[in-house]
Length: 331
Ligand code: ATP
Image (cartoon, rainbow, N blue to C red; front, side, top):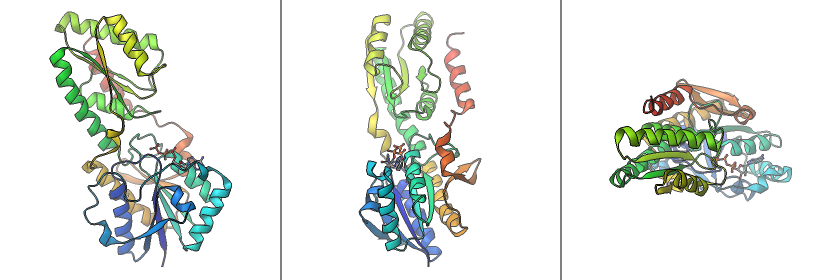
């Protein structure tokens, strides 16, 4: 009988539990044993695990976070750590390890595969959606939902006082959450790393749009969505620039970790269930060193190294819609 282990690593994402559930239930159906390592790669190094059974998966699909806990583990980057992990996996007679996480976690999975003979499978679990080779990642849709509902609330108060708000969302190197949340909340401007050129260009665009609004629509609220870490000098620098140039008060809002929490929306639960279940099939088929993702509604197996070798581009269709809707106000 095959033994399968799973761990969650890196930034936690809503839907990780749904994915663990799918893995465990599929294992039970196929008479495979399932184990969960705790606290990401730390559990693998400390042989800290628990047996996972279908009866423990009840009422789990809707829960945010991860019952296996997640963590960063810098030590895992060393060859010595991978050797320890391989020894621990062999001691437990694990045949395959499934890593649910982001591209950093996949680098870890690839690193392990250089030192361990068992099968290694990655499943994309990160709110950032920045993994090449899959249309979406587990947790991404819930993060958009959280950002949009927060921006809607900010809009109410922004309208009441006719204020400028600057809302920072997560996505350190990728603008997926910012772009989609801005589009879905009818925000007035979006700043994402993929499209950012210079501070002067970005400021000029915002000031032109804002002036147009004030001249044509009266004094109105203005909401800018910005991905974290894009603006040189940080959010405070942009607040000061805008206040100086508009003569208006600018309020910053950092959404922060609320975007990582909450019950996963159905899209994330469905994606997590499909990927978790298909990962077991991939293991039975002998696959290893790949991420199981979804493209155009079909499961795909992408070599782990490809998932971080190139930057996943923003959806051009979405960029086009956003630019049309923002430009429409300045025509
Ligand atoms: P997210 O993007 O959502 O934060 P992530 O999986 O990219 O998720 P990281 O912090 O980049 O998060 O990586 C998670 C863990 O993966 C690290 O703490 C480390 O244990 C492991 N890891 C990352 N890079 C490597 C590497 N080059 N070699 C070995 N292990 C790595």
